[in-house]
Length: 161
Length: 126
Image (cartoon, rainbow over all chains, first blue to last red; front, side):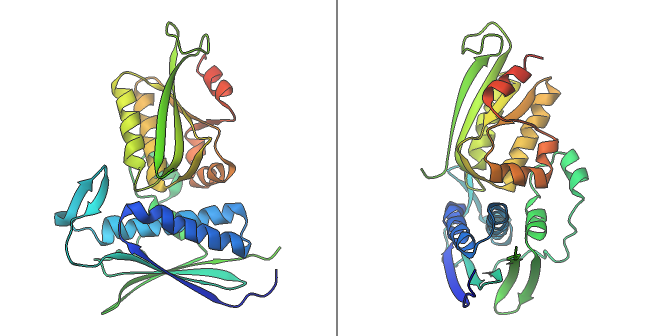
């Protein structure tokens, strides 16, 4: 594959689950064009989807804000902007996804991922999302910057054959 | 198509027809995507089937485009519920990329996966 200059994409959509499919389609398209194999594209797609879902369902949602609308969680209408803000950088070696939110945050760095076999044996409801993000991406970094918000950076490297 | 479309069919595994009389298996076709926006639809359909006394379930995922961790946990929870009643949940026709994700997450070691519907239906005869 020819060397590729860095390209940047900024995706900003309302922080509602309705928009997850749109976000996934954009990321899958970018990853496929970069030449990631199908299995790796599927992992990137799932990691991004889980990260967006975490922001919508955990970071942005306070108990008082939860509203079940048409069978899915949605925030109540107010004048506070709570978007999915995803910046994507791609070059010939990697895809880097930076997600920023101004919600209450979720400290993924210090979240201890359970042992998968023990976790699945208990057949729980939910909670696999953080495992997916940490295991499916090559690098995951989480920081909180006052005045900016919670910043999650997920990177996947394109392995040369 | 936007979202997830779910249809169910009833099979008698003795005759492989929709008529009753034998061991009945419900086949559930799941099309589209199961994510945080749609997983509750799938959970509702499966919970309703269980509430109606259907404990032998096959999910045909031929036209499934995507399934999130919330979707996988619906499958795991359903498997647990029907096994408590002496039944089982089995999957067929998983697209390869979804099969690989299921393998990595360990779901395929908990839920039986078959290549096609006939094979899955036959497995319920035992």
